[in-house]
Length: 328
Image (cartoon, rainbow, N blue to C red; front, side, top):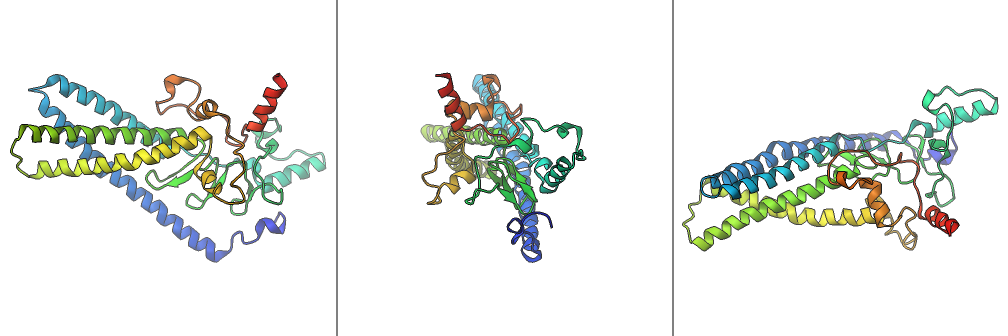
């Protein structure tokens, strides 16, 4: 095997690797199961309860209220579905093959003897934006470049190995079973929008149903408990619970976003040896926001567009402060 011994120590032994593969398969199967629950059960149930049992019956007596309820609900609902779709089917971003140790060894060997390595046209010339020129802000305690023994690749800043996906993911945040996908560099905006619209939709449905319950109590109407009333209670309890949980979860991720920090980086900061370390990627709230949602405010809350950058090269606050000092 190529590379120094410390790269490969405990890297891919058969026993743990086999157990990890089985565990990863189980997690992916659970992810498909969770998606099936959301798509086949929760979404149809909520849609039926709100549209056909709550909004449409108001058409004859309160047509304006009916229209407003339907427009608001379908706006949030469509944005939620679009965000959910994009989060599931947008690749989080993998480490480029140019950071593969074998490729770098080939390139170094070719340069040593004045030859050309067999590479594709897009990386035939090492430019400033090539992954090979990355200046890492994150290194091991001994100062060496971070390296993944399973992928056999050098890891750029903020990249981590996902045992469920079986690869290193750029700016990995976490692996989410509810979307059966890693949340990382290329789909973090869609994930944030999905959480936001899921929170707003569940809160909107729960608040509307609660208002209906209050009106029934105020009017002192007799309630006959049947299947319709049972569906009301189930959907209200589900949406109330989801809105409470997602409010905290989404708020937590917006806090991380404004600090330009992933969940993994937040957890790592609990390490006593890293507690006092300054986050090198925090560029200020405005620039942190723009890094995820872009510069165009009209597209901030729509699940379209691509994340700025390549996920390999990261601007640090040290570089920003140095540039500002030069300008002064």
